[in-house]
Length: 92
Image 1 (cartoon, rainbow, N blue to C red):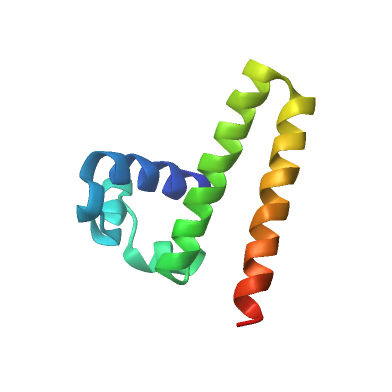
Image 2: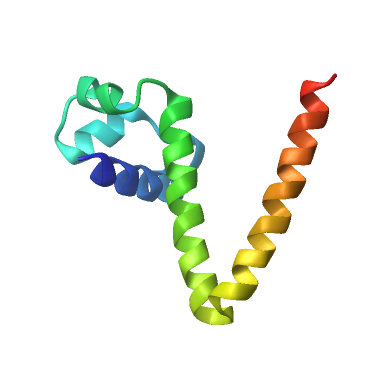
């Protein structure tokens, strides 16, 4: 069910943009909002799961196009940069 919610949430976001809502998401999947909130206790949790799914899909596509070794190097550099930026924000 988790994957179905994420997939429909991504489709709803693409289709509806900022009008995206958990109410419509639950209605489309014919489940209760309670079910959505049970699996994703906050909007941030759902958004993060959506991000992870998009990232994983993009990574698979990039690896298929360019090759796994190059993509893994690029990802390592990007993750290091993000970690460095976050460390700077925490120190403020």
